[in-house]
Image 1 (tube, one colour):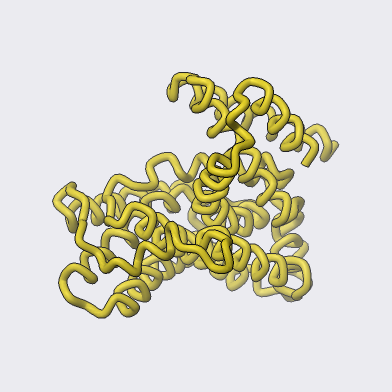
Image 2 (spheres, helix red, strand yellow; image 1 turned 135 degrees about the vertical axis):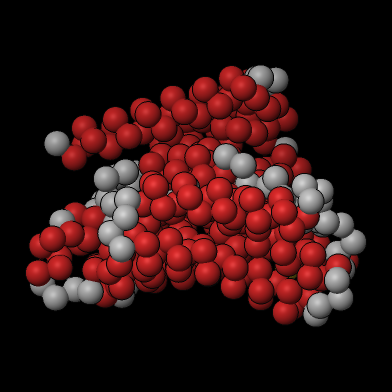
Length: 296
């Protein structure tokens, strides 16, 4: 949290327009998508896993939902199918990781390629436009003056907080990341818990796809490229150990806000996007190093 305050002050000094109401609203709108994805990523990382497929699953969910709506399918049903796609890919990841015992990085790297390939095949590589006007609500609508993407983000975090901090499931997630073998010996169904966290990662990716589709008013097959890096960055910057077992979901929200403020501020002062990627990678390394030092 202190880091977020420091970065905000630095960006305010570097760019006076940073604290304008319009810019802060833009920051929150941009942060919401990554923050939603990062919820699922947090759950996965807490168990000692990783999910590299989140960005590609988001692209497939969004393009499929958009394509179905344009084809005349009921919009609510189309969005539900998009979420089901995220559920399916997350479930598939969970089956291979939890029950087949395959390395998470290999499994999710494979499903990342599959999901991205299917999105490009389905769309022919072109955006899908012509969505119903009301879909824009998810990306830019407001309720009582609060942006819909922000409300969706807060709702997702509230649910995740309850799951991880107030229910036995959360204790199992932390225990698996801390010592999987010992947790298994206590009678916890480790494979089932892992299956659930990977499925949650798929669902949050699909929810983020709905927000992005509403914001762009189109299904973009190339959407989500690099989003897995942003989600991981938000998680580790929020204090979650990359090796699992330690962290907090609200820390991830702070990490996502910190990353969003940093991206926005760097754009405002004209930093080259390629340089921004270097900075982002460096921050991830620093956050991981600090996390490991604290654990000693």
